[in-house]
Amino acid sequence: MSYQVSASEIKRAQHLHSVLLFDFIVVHVFVFILALSLIKSSYIPLSLMPLLSVGALGYVMFKARRALTQEPVWFVRCHMILAGRRARMFFALFVVTGAFTAAMYFGGGQIGLSPIASLSLAFGLGQLPFMASLLVLIVLEFDAEHQCKKGKIPAAALALHPAPTIVARASQNDGSPAP
Image (tube, rainbow, N blue to C red; front, side, top):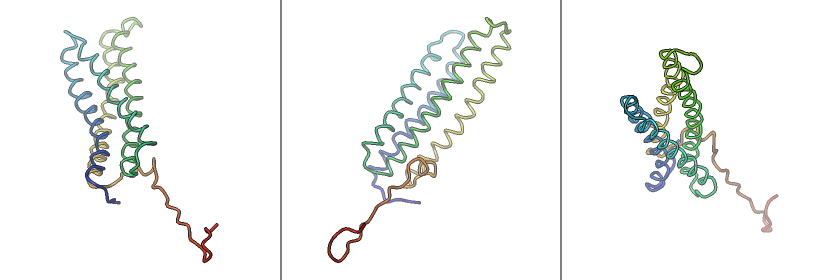
């Protein structure tokens, strides 16, 4: 369903989707590939990736939480809440799979695994589901941003923050409000 929204409202609603897409594509795809290519010589890109991602996700979650109380436009609030929920979900996924990957990569030898087994567990069980989920989230965020440009609200956002109901009071003939 399309809504009548101004260009400034669309821009405000799109902002958090754009930050999430930047985090997903630039940080988690490009910086991750850079980190993998430089992992033997430097851990700087590998340590830079979580810092950039936590900063971007924290920003999205903060703005989405603030939108609940301070955003007057329902359309913008719906898109911000949806972006915040996806950021929280991605943050939880990032922490769990990142901790498992780091434990297997750096500590696999200490628990008696061979180097190949620890790398297989780190990147097979740790990063493969993460990257598949990341691909799904990229598609969902592109769709949400596209719907935002068209003045639409995704069904997931409507489920999170339903439309406000306007209660109209009918007046009786004597001017007193209806019960």
